[in-house]
Image 1 (cartoon, one colour):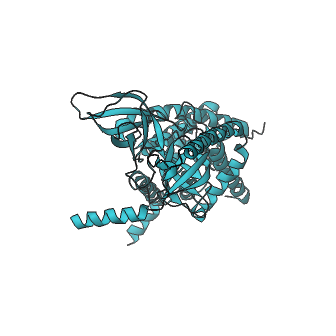
Image 2 (cartoon, chains in turn blue, red):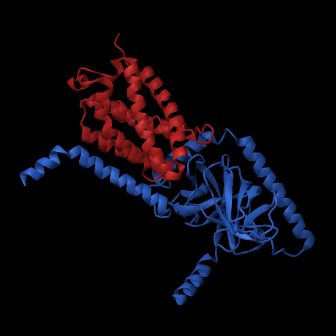
Image 3 (cartoon, one colour):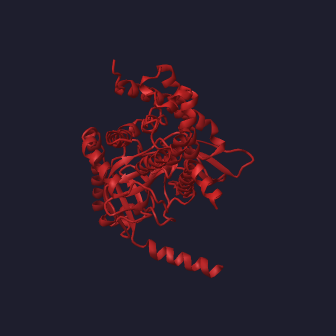
Length: 276
Length: 169
């Protein structure tokens, strides 16, 4: 018994190291594999508070640029309203504005990463402002990411520039859909996978979100085809997509809530359960 | 540790975390090069301080950085690792004399200080980027990030040490 106690005392530094290193590795693995159940994230009272303090200072630096972006968006929306009034009928193919099942919440990015392999943004709105986990986040130009954890006043968003990120996307012209992932090589360039080889692909094609997932409304712009290739022995294209949103300067964003998501997911789960 | 040392180290802890999170994490040269200054806390922790306490503090330090960076536990792991190997690194950089309490890091020859900083930064960054990227196929990216960020971090640390060393000359 005494021997054991002596052993612990003699090696207490190593044991402490091993314990804490083990915990760290555990947290790391957790963040690599189960991206929704993270214990340590920036959507909390302390880091959220410090980041919003930081953003009260740094917000002034790019006011001009952000104003231009918002003016540009106003212009687009104004043109859109004009068209609607002229047609006097709601164009249901452009689901972003017409479909009533989506609610938009404005928020501001108070912390932004884009240089790591797993990037997250922190927003200044949280569950008190009706933000929930799994809501899509878009900017005026295109998609930004998906909310992955919320606290009372802050939300942490998994950026599309994250190796865990998987967004269903499709070609605007042909409706062929695939999964959008990021290979970490260039910020602002993501990869569209699983596009079958019979799909027509051309440089500059617009990629938009697909309504099949309950996270984003259909037709939110994502980016355009930058380059693509198809190996003769593979059935799928590998396509590089340049994002419309400049992820390095995104500031004003909208969280999108699909009010029918729960209903759709419940139905889908029922079907899956029935098949098993 | 005396009261004074506790105060100095607490202030150093907080200042380094703030500088890292608010300033250095926003620097992204060429998209992936980011200097890390906060391990300096572990490097200049009192040489006669409690080793277990250092390992525990390093864990808290790393976890704080992780919390701000949404990076799981990668910084915590890297910090705990270099806190654990610190005695070995001290011995290999400054010789056995560091154990006799006669040595202060800031009064050692500059070349030895730089050697010590480089060693510690290298191990910190290797653990950090291996865990962050976590993909053996990307070993080149791990090495590239370690090299570029490491050089930047080391330069920054040497400058900070030179700037703040109190040489009673």
